[in-house]
Length: 227
Image (cartoon, rainbow, N blue to C red):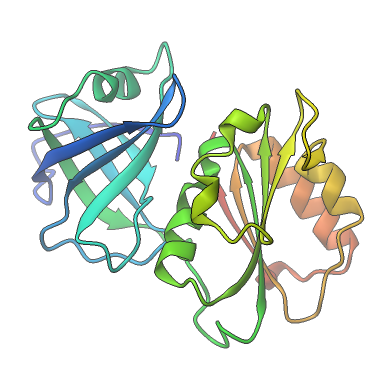
């Protein structure tokens, strides 16, 4: 989710939510936990969030699970980003203005537990997949997570260690060294496998081309562009 929204007087669905926790994963990324109340969502969807009284709002994929009593979003601080910098300086007890949920990027429920899922993310694009795995831990999934450094393997202990593969492009690690496009070239695909892509537009374009060259049909590729 990369779009900044300018709030108007017609935004009648905005609700006010109290922040309960701010949990930093790195110096520039953090998880905001706030009231859920009556918000119902499907993992993969997003909400539009801004600080109380601000004209600027931004779309964020929901990070928490469908059955959690709270809502979470995963935020990367951007130095020239109005919304992320405002959220960075929030504290427990402050209020957010939240609208949603929105979006069609979500799990295909047909044969959910019998088919395989390949989740491909870059950076904070891991967010909707965290929600999906938290909501449906019994699904058969693998996550290819493109990051620069292993320190950016956000909340990696929340995933099955056999199912989460961090792909580091700036340092060598005991996992995969290279980009998600590199590992995907030799990654086996299967006829019943579903592919979910979330992250920067360049990755999504390149990965989609690789999958199509492997014979994967378009209806089995679902995408969500962050930047």
